[in-house]
Image (cartoon, rainbow, N blue to C red; front, side, top):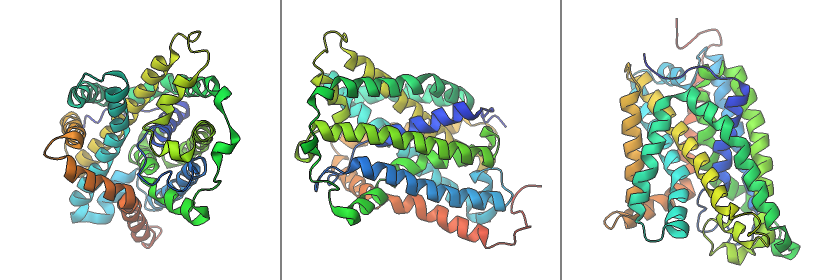
Length: 369
């Protein structure tokens, strides 16, 4: 079977998952009410990562107890004849996660850099690149993520440092927007931004040398990504008031323009955006690869490449539908639903699978020889 999986170490897997988590929390589009009652994203994002990590460990425990090597085997063993439908469901959710990783960058390129270029043309440029990254396989994209992770974080810190002269503490008010209840609700709603990265780790657990190694990677990546997102969103809150943030698209992309020493940095904002976009494409490639892998494992296909091609095409269709004349209105309705209730689609099925798996006799393996 040509899965193009390979094997990677702790550094590569940590870099890949941290990149995916950071892209999800720092560069994905926020829902319309993200800043409606104040900016508390520097609390919401780490809390959402923690909730996603909790669901991950529940699912990882079920996989380990059942003797499966990865999530693909758990689905095959639990669902039996319904595994085909379950695989398609997980595949579609991972494709939507890939779309989320690319949507903001595509829109940013369209509105901030290439105003005269159509959104569809930019999407037609980005998705084939993501397809090629996914086609190279899991090991290759992981080693590529290891190369890009440090520059991505470094450029983020440089961008924040460049705007430090504009920091004002009063802009953080009202503190803890929406209160504790509002923070928890928003954290739950943000789960679709982070849980796909953890789900990916379970789908390729055998490629990171087993569930135990995957668990360590998940914990380390969660801590690193949470720290990065606290710094990033705290900086955004010090630069913009919550009313300004409610009107701004991709504030991290705009924070570079506030730099007082921009001329000395030789327009580092362009370079930063390029590095960040590469992180988004690697994250999308990871989701496309994982969507394809669970599909071919359930349907016993021998080659992952056709599945990657189909997954990439579906991602492109979502990007084009977002701004298409005949599909834009319907897409906004679906997007609003996913922003509000998408977390249920991501976490409830894994929890149900875990409960079913954990209810089985401990010694009985549900999959494998």
